[in-house]
Image (tube, rainbow, N blue to C red):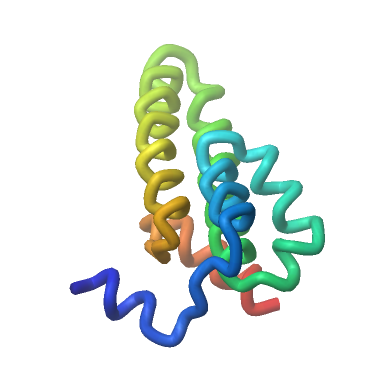
Amino acid sequence: MADEQMTAGRPGPQSDSNRILAALGYPIWIVALVMVLTEPGKTDPFVKYHGWQALFYGIAVFIIGLVPFIGWIASFVLWVVSIYFAIQAYNGKYFEVPVIYGLAKKQMED
């Protein structure tokens, strides 16, 4: 039910390539950076949404990974979670990553 409320009024992905691009941004944050800097991330709302959210998520995982031992474990766990996010994006769903969404939303509005 929450997914239905979140997707109301939001356009879905326009093509399979946009869904794949959005999905790849979560486990590989460099792809997310490319998404937000290139044409699909500037014109397609679905790619823009997932691009900014995946970019901030990837940066957070990278920073957490800099902390010795505990950070490495947490970073690995968060990377595994990013696979789940990638599957959700590939299925054309909008979802909010806690804390990260607030940062990404500010960038999406610009």
